[in-house]
Length: 471
Image (cartoon, rainbow, N blue to C red; front, side, top):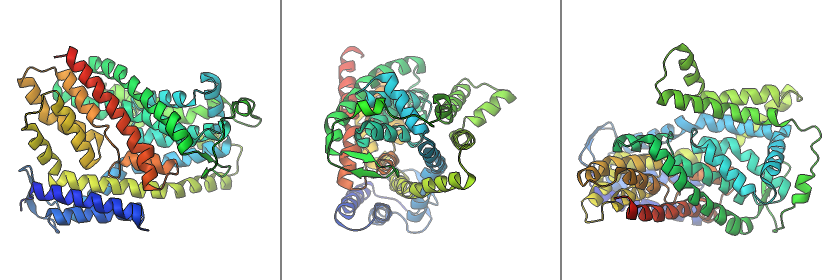
């Protein structure tokens, strides 16, 4: 059976329209709306109801792909990579909260960066952490620091959380050895070291623009502070209280080393894994380190360290109760994240993404804009930044090489395009919004979709400026 590309495109447009109406205007929960609309897209698009051999819209043969296979595969595939980490991360966050470690971290950041620089501190933290770690995992692990800073300074947790999320996603999308950019470098056959240096420089203005938006717009528009129970509540705006923050009572709060250790240890292990894998280091010792540096194992070790160090003053019952409280909050994050993955997978399985990208490649668009436009379009259609940049690279690398265009610039364009407008089909959209307690769809779009688009917009300007000097 062959899937018609035009029909699938119409189905996607209808599906997105229905999804927006369901989320904005009805009482249907976002997870259910995502699954319903994913199935609707498949049915209208002509995907088989039962598993069969098909030829997708790009002409490739697929075996065993059906609507339900795509939904369950996308849901399971997304949660398979991040679900366990979300579970470990929220349990660790709860221990940070009850032990006072998050308070110690917040106080350390205040002392280190000075008052009024909390957004910059969190963005820089995310900027560095996301080079070796997936941004989803990084945000789950680091978000307790943003919440603690919000509680102590009375600054909105939304602006602080968005600054952290922006720092994480920008380097995740641009800087090797994150898998997406590393894959793009491989497809284009360019020098990874030179690409890394260039993208770090390009990422800085993008992060600054997102910080300005968080501070000038979100800080007052969405003024929300975590209460003593950890619930994020909306309240009338008040000016930051740095005096109280700098003079807060730290009696009984764990020291900086003990507080940061469960956070730093996984980051170091994952970084070692990344470097050792990239350098293809062998031997039993390195194999053990590579295993320990797998994100699931590393964050699990961090959780164990938190239990046995930060949890030491508490009874077994107290620590178990706190971790279970964290696990309860993880449920909705996992469901909507998996739902976003299901919507993205049905686009990939139908071949619609490749169909649209190939059609765009045949137009008379200036060559350097081609990878940017294909990556942007792919990002909007199916949600995954990694899929967007690698698909754009696969299609445009041979075209740019044949035309003797600058391949490094082409690779940068692929990565920049993958930042465009993260919304319902993007797992990170749900992780950020749900962790920060943003549940209304209109607010979710303003909090995260606009932020990611600002980063994309600055990146587009940078690509256009670079194209004047790099031919």
